[in-house]
Image (cartoon, rainbow, N blue to C red; front, top):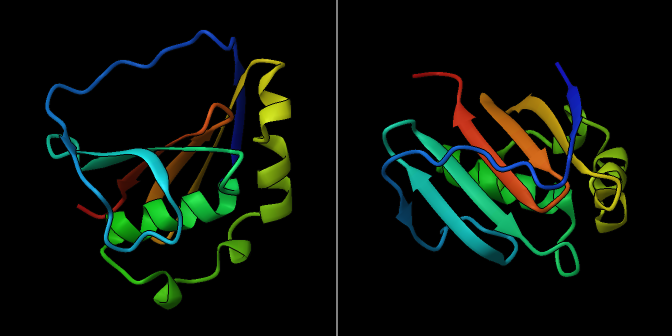
Length: 125
């Protein structure tokens, strides 16, 4: 299931209570920040649109959440059109408000925002 939501650019989400910041071991890109919220088994990453494509950041974040080498994961293009994902969440599109795209990938719920944020949560607990 793919969902697209457009919200005003000043929308902020609630912060989970406990978080841990660290450097992901499976990353194939550089993140501005990467956090894990153990209370919710949720990962949140912030990436730079100028240096990283959205699709690459999604793969890296899910690989970390799944503790799996990205090479061993199903290709993202089997789940979502990566050209559309990259285009819809480009910095240019963010000027029209924050867009959120949600989908399931590699047994994880993924939400990506046009401001460069990604949240990933396992669907199998």
